[in-house]
Image (cartoon, rainbow, N blue to C red; front, side, top):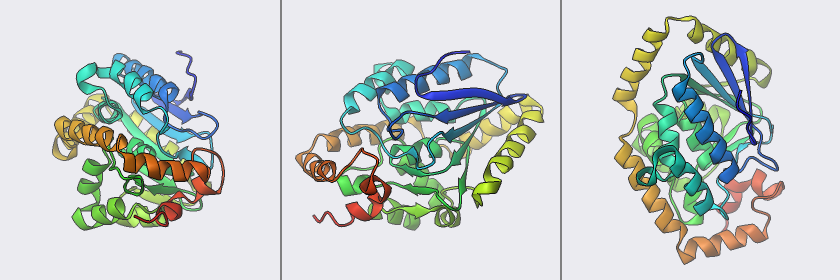
Length: 277
């Protein structure tokens, strides 16, 4: 089995692979994690033993809080290795996970904001712990937009009004709020989450693989955003990430502890709402 720097990968049941994100100090999406995701993608595309992948976190406070804002160029270069220069974006890498012939189940504990939410949205279904799961798209507070699929997925899952609230409001959502809006499939008590997801994964892996593959392909055709829309959002994100407004607002948050394990990252949804214009 491939050795990963930031992922713990292990088979847990016949046909089921569990992947835990373990990128200290807090699971930021940077070049190392993206490099491992590209490798994992290649393994899943070329193999036929895995039918279901369960994606979780090794850090109970953070699933993925957001991208590493100091390494956008570096992680984008790693993402390009999955699809070439025409698809050099995190969004297109995540889009390829959505189109895999395996079923991808996201299991959320801790905070999944920005690209962390978008990684879950690229999954085929999502389940969250009631007690500690937080999800959000805070990019608007920095002066950007969700650039890795969040715009496209949330508009389809939540509907126009709720997607406007989630993206333009930039606030944190609890697991139960996210379930009510359709951001996650279900919010479950933390003590029940692992067994529920494991049972569902085993169940899907036990069904005829051709039928599972065709069902996923058909639902993808009906619901997935087109690749060009993902590309367009990625281009817009990169343009906004280079603006002085985003740099200035990020500098304020970095001075307060952004990208460190502390109160600001735990309560980022509240903090960006108090930055002012």
